[in-house]
Length: 51
Image (cartoon, rainbow, N blue to C red):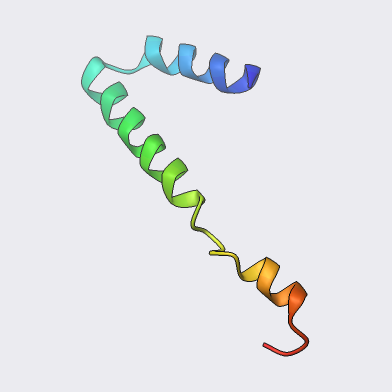
């Protein structure tokens, strides 16, 4: 968590407001899609004998 905050502060200082806004949108979307990365396949493969 501390590393994420430090990275955000450093990027806010280095990037222009337009680039920082684009970076924020990309991070938000990739974070949202990471919830659906495995789509529960790991839990299903543990519970079933055969796939």
